[in-house]
Length: 319
Image 1 (tube, rainbow, N blue to C red):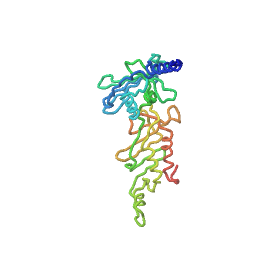
Image 2: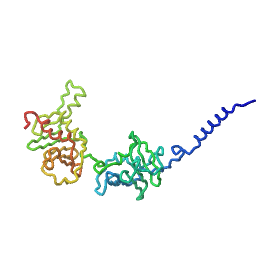
Image 3: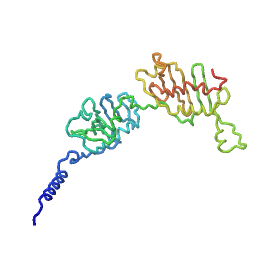
Image 4: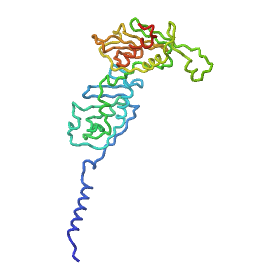
């Protein structure tokens, strides 16, 4: 029987191609990802970051993270984001083994170098490069490994920080329910309020109405204050964060405040704002009893404080 050669040859070619595709050395799939050992977050005691934004160091002291030799308190949430990356870097695939690092933002003047320390020794070193075009992945390089890998998240923004970016911006915090006295001084305007127990009339009042009338805000010199406005003011100041810190102004150098707010509860909380430096009326330096440094408040907080006397005083007492 005569066998046709063409189908046999074609089948042999197809089989050879399949075997080639399966067995060939494909750099994108035929490699082993490095086995990265995890580091317990509790054991990480220091972080050093160097990159285009400058050098930055973090140290854990008494279970709190502080920045640099100055000991500025660090934002715990931002530090936690760093620790999650350092604990065990996640890599999905290899991006390159060509050593052409400039293509991935890993050249010396562009990369971010992160070093983490544990028990006084270097425990982790990561080089962070550019993000991918969709900003969903980041090119990274591990110490003692010349290859470039994909990290499945944009982590460059987590580490690309200056000192002020990483500082804890909280400058005033208290429980509004503990405040029983408010003093506001703005030039000649003085507003003094005290929280008093209301003489609740129980006749024909529901439990909800009785609860609302248990306390009332009253002016020191007599007369009821608007409870809603007063509580709204306290809410606005109960958790204040600053816009930025001042590095060329010591809090002791700030005198004669434009406006000072004192709130008394379990202790006294104060927040004072001052005239703008160099006659800049758009910038109000400020200090707080709950923070050791001078800072700039956000415009919304400044507006809340400066407008408080007019909002809280009865119309016939406004100056």
